[in-house]
Length: 197
Length: 197
Image (cartoon, rainbow over all chains, first blue to last red):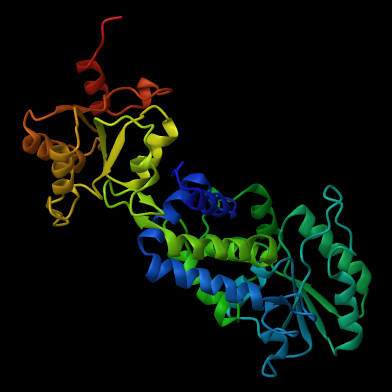
C-alpha cells in the first residue's frame, strides 16, 4: 500500500506482533522511518542482539542470556522456595511486584485437554525433578485463576503429594477493586476466604 | 523487570512506538523471543534494510527508496492532477482506496498557530513551485476535516488564487455510517451539501 515493497513487508511483519494490527503497524513503521537514525537502527540492532543471545534457562525456563538465567544464578536469592508460574510474562509480573525473593519455575503454559497440552508438554517433570534434587521446602503455585490454571495446580498438587509445603496465591478482591465491578466468582472466593480483622 | 538488561532495553524501545505501551511491548518482545529465528531476526533485518534505504521523495514528500518515489516515477500515472495530503499515512490511505491515479504532494503536517507550524515548515512553497513548473490543471485538497486541516486548505486556496482548478474532498455521511452516531457538524455538512437524486 505504500508502493514500496520493503516498507510493506516491514508493516506486515509488525502487524503480526500480538497487540498490533495493520493500522498500528503502519503508524509504528511510519514513526520509525521518520526517526530512522535515532530510533529504527538502534531498535533493529537491539533486536538482533536479543535474537542472538536470548535463551531459555535450562533450570527454570526463564529467558536469559546464559545456560542458567540471572535469577537461578543469583546466590542472594533464597533457595528452598519455588514459585511456579505459567509463563515468562508471569515471572516478570512477579518480579515487578518485587516481593518474592526465592526461585522460579516456568511451566510454559497450562494443561489443556482442548489444546492437547499434557504434563510432558509443560515443564512439570522438570519441576518434580528439581524438588527431588534441590532442597525445596515450599512450592508456591502462582497460576492463573482460570479453569486451565486451576486444573494444572491440582495436577501438580496430586504429583507432589506431601513431599513439600504447597501453597497457592490468595484469591479475593484486587487492590483498588470495587465490589460493584467484580464478578460473582471473585466475590464468592473473597467471602469464603474472609479474614478476622 | 526481566532481570536482563538487553531485553529490558528492547522492551523500552518498543514501548516508545506509537500505539504500544509497556504492557503490549512486553507481550510483543516475549512473542519475538519465542520465535526468534522465524520472526525476530527477519524483522530486525528488514528494519535495518528500511532504515538504510528509506528516504523522502524530493518531489512530493512521499517515502520511497530513491531520490524520486515510485509514484512520482510512474509514467502510467496521470500528470496534471495533484492530491495534497497532510501526511504519508494519508497518502497510503488514498492508495489503499485505489481510486486516485494522479500525483501526490505530502505537506508533512498542517498549519498550526499553537504548535508554531507556518507555511515554511510545511511543503507549501514546494507545492506552489510544482504548480508553476508541472502542467497542473487540478489540485485536490485531501486534508483532514479538522480546524487545522481546513485552515491549511484555506491558506493554500488563497495562495493559488485561480491559477488551477482547486477542489476538496466531499464532506458528509461516511459509508456505513448511522445518523444516530454522527456528530452535529457532519450532519450539518451532509445536509448543506445534499444532492438531487
